[in-house]
Image 1 (cartoon, rainbow, N blue to C red):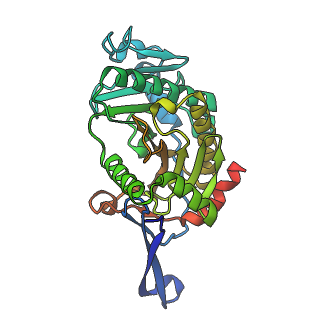
Image 2 (tube, helix red, strand yellow):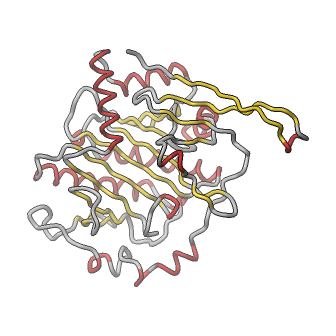
Length: 340
């Protein structure tokens, strides 16, 4: 078994009124994820720009007394952990505050309020702010796993601004740990385990090696993280960062600084294409093993057109098939400039 990048082109023939009724063939490309076998579709890009939304007015309306994460409220409006897990009930690390999620998604679910500022635009984030927030999340996970030996899966997740599913403007991230995996964690683990069994090598190492050699989707390296664009993307762009670390215990301040520096570059790129919202998921194996690596995926979220149409539809949710309006290899060329 080796890493293969499989794609199939399909063509739809019709008369195009935008080209005086000319008979044309329009292409859709179906790509297979080299790890999981799942497919996604590269569709025709109509060339419409992504239009960012400015949330400044909404920020003014929701800040201060109306926001549970603002400085005057965070210590009175948010819940506390039991003292046997965290003395005093919360982790305070510089401006970051870690507390339980009132309505948890998992057996263990912390929220990290990242900073005091209520609304932080992408270009206003700093590397120290981001690194500190992920470091605080890391601290929480280490405490959970030390206390709950059944914990087998963990992740750090960021929904930024309303198009991403974020329900509070104030910057925050979610930290999850559980005995049970999400579908993605289960599928990725099964694929990497099968790859290791058949090749006696790590899939993620092989992916970076292959992408470096092909040089079509390799973006760059920031310290301990190698970045590629996913061959079969889960959105209109899909940036994957593969860490040197294999497990939670191998992560350290250097890891968070490298991640933070990388994200600042992606935010700069997003600004050039009109993206202000995103989802990020960092998948962290709890115990070191030969088949996995800590890895992160970053995808944009947006609304389209005057109706502010969601970027996700029946294909994403019921077919389980992501759509991508941008060709990954072209996106790679555009974003790689920010990593030079």
